[in-house]
Each structure stands twice: as C-alpha cells, then as structure tokens.
Image (cartoon, helix red, strand yellow):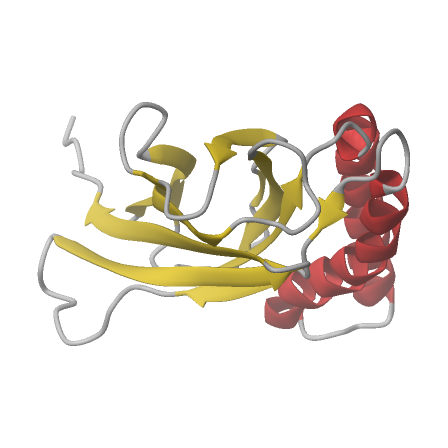
Length: 202
C-alpha cells in the first residue's frame, strides 16, 4: 500500500549571528531530496527569514513544506541533501541554473550506472550523490558573486518510516540540522511523516 510522505521545516533558531555582518543574517535554504525508487524533489531556493542572535522562528512561513508526495511501500527511504546560505546576493541569481544542472547531471549519472549494470535498487542514491557532491563547488563559487554569500557545509539526512509500528496508519519523527560558519550558528528542526494512502475500491 503506498504511503504519503511529508517533510517540513518547523523551527529555525539563530544560536549565534555571523561575525562581521552588517544587520541581521538573511538565511536561505537550497537543496534536493530523492526517494529509494528515484523520485527526485527540489527544495527550491527558499527564504528562511532574517535572524539575530537568539531569534527563533516557528510561525509565519513555518511549518514550511519541503516534500509532500506518495511513495511506494517498498521505497520509503528518502535522502535529503541541503545547504544553508547567508545571503548577500550571489547564490540567488544562480539557483535556477544550478537546479537544472543538478537534475541533468543526476539523469546522466543514472543512465551511466544503468549501462554499467549497477544494481537497480542502488542507482537512485548513488547517482544522487555523484551529482550532489560536485554541486558543492558550484554553489560555493556562486556565493562569491555579488557581495559574497556565506554557503554553509551541506547537510544530509536519510529518512525512513519509524520502525515498530508498521501496522499503524501513521508514523512520524524529527531530526535536526546544525551548521556553523564565521561564528554564525544555526539550528533547524525538521519533521517528517508517513501515512497510508486509502485504497479506493471501484
């Protein structure tokens, strides 16, 4: 039975504002996710708001839906890969092109792995990593355009349906993203959920 999968960003906390930065930090998020069966999702280049030390956001644009889709019962694992960006104007102008470049690279890597007769179940995650890792340099380079964005190290999470309650119709969990750069220190809380999709009998 298919499962509806949701991934949401529910909370952002500025533990420490960036050093040598005029005004508040303008935080953004950019990344992608992929399911075990090869369904690819992009976060888009999203604004998380403006932050000074001690600021916490849990309302307004939050909870922010990152993924909301149906997954096959035998492909519930989702790999999430994301960058935080303190924006001054560089990555924003390149985000759309970077997303297209990533998708094209992912498809090319997947085709090559298929030609090499790589195990089919392993192709989506392997191709995803082979496409995402080089993208880090491209994003860092884009950040040097304009007034030099601060691009934090990428964060990854492997999400799966919580065990122990497979008979239940719903299951959920959460994880945390924490990244620091130039004294800027941010903690993000993500929540995910799985729920059975009702079967409609004709």
